[in-house]
Image (cartoon, rainbow, N blue to C red; front, side, top):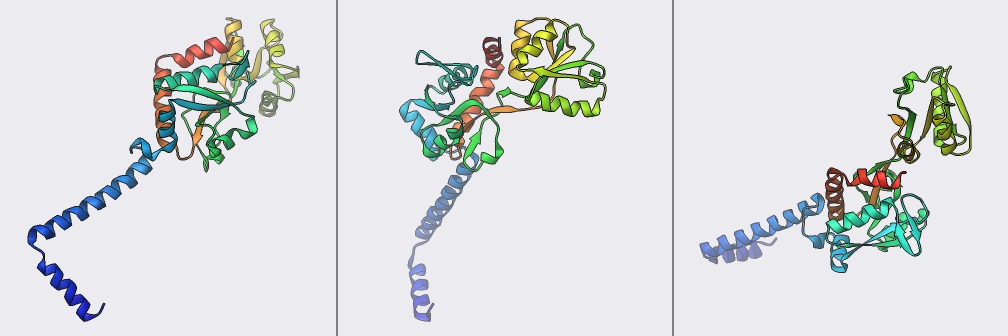
Length: 281
């Protein structure tokens, strides 16, 4: 900066009255605070709805667009043009909590994340496993269902967990995730009598009821269904954890908070337990 230019700036500064300098300082401080608040709210999810365009647009429409993979029963189905299922009821209840309605967007499983990125849907709710590798383009709700493998046994039996499977007859559906898990267990429990000749979990569960098996390993959906259909059976132990979540666009931080808030309230009210009883039977 040249010396004459510097002198002109100093002269201009000195020409300002004290109250004018104080006003300029105050305005500058407010601008800095304003930018700091915007940065904090954008990262913490506490800002106004306009910072989350997905949430703001949903409020303007009055609806949440939910991508679903139709036919993955009992989570999503379509009968006579009407959507039904566990996830359908759940997302309707979530939308209702927000004062919105749920609109369902039929989507093939492989394209579920694509509809979020393209803006054709606000949520994905379709027995969707938590996939952290998709975090670059999606956010995830808290877990609402565990689709993992369970150890199913008779109520009156002596089996309370895998430690009691030595010398026991354990049934699984051939080629299933339960089959692979049971074979790993058999390596550490050599006397485990693995019966993997069943085509479907229901066949193994039928033999469990008849006393031909001591235990069955199957996914949580089949296990919950069996417990409701046969009061004499119980889930002794959860062997794996496969969390199901709701996905939303990466930018939808406020929508994520609203979904989690609704899920927490519905869980506390017993709504999720009621869904289990209604759809796994």
